[in-house]
Image (cartoon, rainbow, N blue to C red; front, top):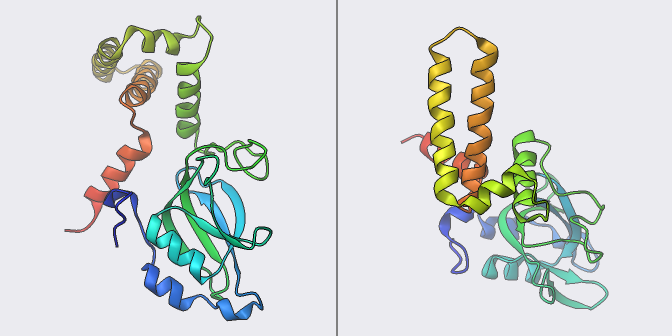
Length: 220
């Protein structure tokens, strides 16, 4: 089931939307609502909680944008309809009792109305250090610190960044032929760091690369 707004590679359903809608026990609640917890698809951080009725679930499926039923507004409410900070759907999971949803999505900006990344005022960064490092590289790229090494690389342009990756790769190969473990690991770290910078310069992420590797790993 592919939405026109999202490329096929950006949709991963644990179960089909039809099965999810049919299996959810909306009737357990007097108002026909079930809690929907939203989690960042990439970082794993819990972003917010809302409520969905069957109509909201249908609209989420149709548009690819997470839509709730607002108990205060008494109507369907698509997250980001005013701010533009939508939640782009990636996965929907139904719990074992069929009366709550876990929505995995890609946030298009801060999620909380206060401007925080999450409704629990947590930074939406992965506990994985490489993902955290990607976040820091992005901050350095757009930051005001003119003494930042990362910022200086971006200012020199893509060719310089690609050249730096090539230089670090050569240095790693040279150290691989030696027996000094510390020097080899140091060059490996340098290469990995500059590789992350290159991904950022190409508007790609490590998650994109991992996703491609996962696709290739699928049984033929």
